[in-house]
Length: 321
Image (cartoon, rainbow, N blue to C red; front, side, top):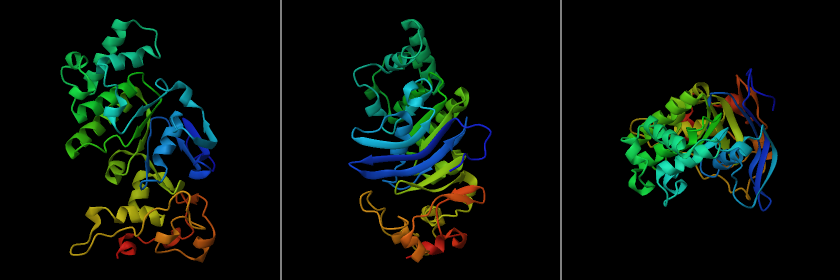
């Protein structure tokens, strides 16, 4: 895959492969991240989204083997040039240290400043993400924060050293709708303030529509579709993308059952021959059963599908029971 049409590339991923005991969980994935953009990575559970995000940070689970290239390697500068907003803020924060102390430690890990200066920066960071009475709350422990406040605190920690890139792995999954919206606004404001690119792993296509510049759709460890978010969500060219969109509740025709993607994604060690989506795809042909499609340019995006010209719009009728 050649670099996408952009004068600048902050990070280039080529043929990324991640395996466990020889079984591929991410299989030859290539994409770029551009300065200051929001790149969303979407797909069902098991698609390889979180593994891909953690590979950028050099934080893969023990036992993982990798191939391909990620350039430049920002993982050596974790906390300074690249940082993480995790899904579970309570687990990410130490339960035995005040939140302010943890943010101050993040400052001192990359900058030679006094404890007093680091502490002042920590309080200021909590204040910027909307933590009330930040100086007092800095002395509190994570269990004394609400879920929304904890997620704001990890956003403060991820952005306190003004990284070039922030990776957010399902940052709103455990939150209710009100707190989800608040956290997404804070994340967007802090990303803009420090001028960072954001790689946003999410299953929520409404979040992608509202917040992402581009979207990478993954299935069974591979790229299915990659392009501008408005265009991919507005008129998908891969049947899998179309199925995800058709399954959204707002797309249910009155009086009819909600369209669904039949079946479940295959396990990494039990992939069908050809295209991995074939057993669930209403457009699958003999070619799909024989040959796995490679990503190729389609209408200003990348699509890995043999049958993309035949994906109707809207596509919800394809996925009715």
